[in-house]
Length: 116
Image (cartoon, rainbow, N blue to C red; front, side, top):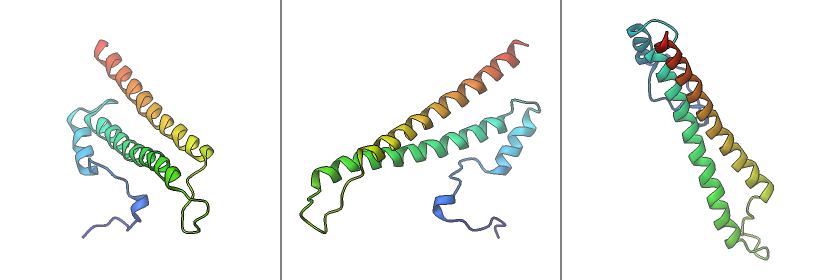
């Protein structure tokens, strides 16, 4: 039986590596740069990429929504505003930058450790 408290789908962690695998990875190579730390990083990247895919589908779908919108039809749903679309695109860019920055930091740490 799982001891994890139930969460909604929006709160799910979307992790590829479970805590027992991460802990085992940490035990393989004790120190600051462990396999477990890389697994945590990969879990975070997985979460970001999952969100990025959703954001891009919303922006793409909005173009379809815009072309199909009929302001004279009360059942026709309006598209997102260009401001909202721009905010989603900016959020997607920030997600990509977070992945890039995290990868650069981790690579620098590993490169420094190997040079030592």
